[in-house]
Length: 156
Image (cartoon, rainbow, N blue to C red):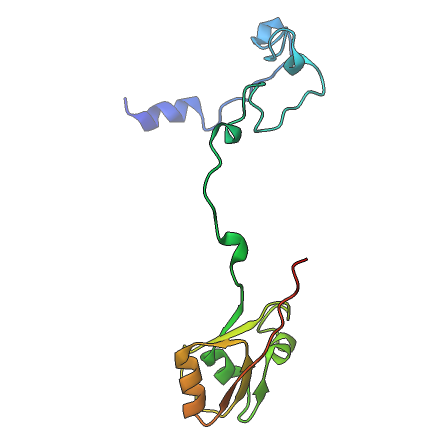
């Protein structure tokens, strides 16, 4: 007898456990909740991380070290090939124009231009940062790369 022959006779789905339907079902009485305690009471729920009163998993570890993650600089990043496809020759491109064309989500972050793709049109691009290849390609195509002075919001 092969495994597929056994499963044909048994059927595809296992019958669900019918809880609280009398002693004859095998799941009557306490209905799988055990005796006494909060878990046996109606309305009881426990958060997933609860460990029964012992010191929680995360608190058992020493807290050491330092992370620079809170100090990372974030930018809206755009490549030259996007500008080539979506703007006409001679266009002035800055963060507001890109946000209006929905190439960046908003104007909250500074803009960084990267040099992926070729540039055949002449653009005036204003951004906070340029990669070396992006600046070179913009200037070789006859355009200008203007550094935007962005004041960072105060952190007080």
